[in-house]
Image 1 (cartoon, helix red, strand yellow):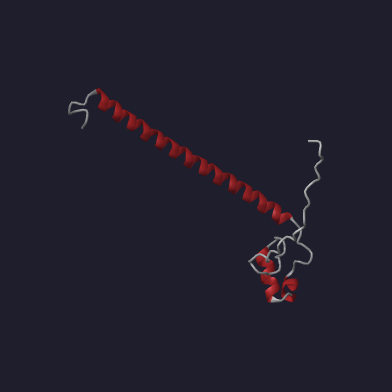
Image 2: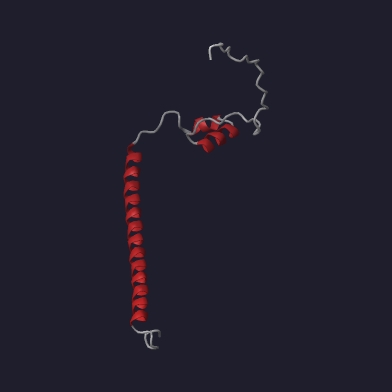
Length: 116
């Protein structure tokens, strides 16, 4: 519309500039889609390989269902929730301990000589 109402070359340049920006945005979108597809392909390939390795692994000793049944429900839940993490610290107050003031040590000024 701007090109037909006397704006001329400047309006055409603005229009082409906006078209170029739109084309660049579409190109970037297609690149992102291709990258996400490639990432999904890599994830699926690695997942299949890991599943094959996991299938060949021997069963862990002591990981049978009889071990789980011997645990108390609370211990089992805690073990499942922490799944390989460090043991939880004992619960304590979220507030810091009260600070004790530093004991006041009397200071003596250094002795100055008379030769100054």
